[in-house]
Length: 186
Ligand code: HEM
Image (cartoon, rainbow, N blue to C red; front, side, top):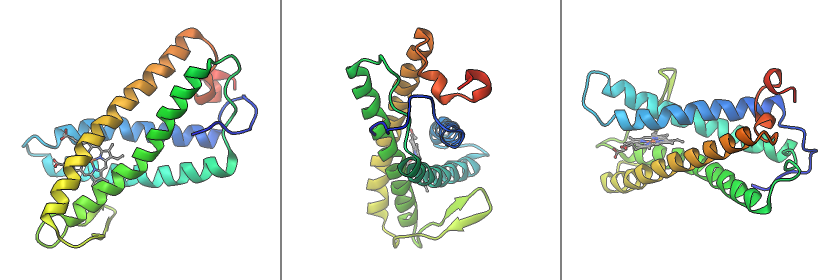
């Protein structure tokens, strides 16, 4: 996603909060997605947690994108090389797209699963109804893609964190833009 036209001072409190909430959810949902494959007493709970976190990520991402479109994002920190801006914009853009597309795909595949379709839980508070009718084949194929793309998201997150660490070690001020004011003074 391209940088907005705000001055290069740092992200707003709302943008930082949304970023770190999504980060926490994504860093939890991937290992949970891995563990829930293993048979054990908590397997159902892990499945429900994975699905609930996915719905939460989708909701947070919709709010995040709307907020970014309305409020903009700070301009790039001065002195950042062109290639770095290009790579970071690409990684951010793909993450935005996948963090919307992947939970929607999970929701569709889950809806189509089983003889009568399957509702999607949200932390035991309520359930989202199936949005497509039962279809074993459809469910299987979407889940197969969901798994692969889920791990692609994991790889992009590693790249994203690597980039952030590089800026942190260089001390060029990019990391400071996204951490709470009490730590960064921005
Ligand atoms: C951003 C959101 C999401 C991410 C990053 C994500 C990530 C993943 C990953 C990495 C796996 C593969 C784990 C493995 O077997 O190695 C997976 C599997 C799975 N996910 Fe998600 N997921 C998300 C949202 C959802 C949602 C919303 C649902 C359902 C409503 C869902 C349901 C499932 C199910 C049932 C599997 C197992 C599929 C199978 O074994 O065939 N996921 N997910």
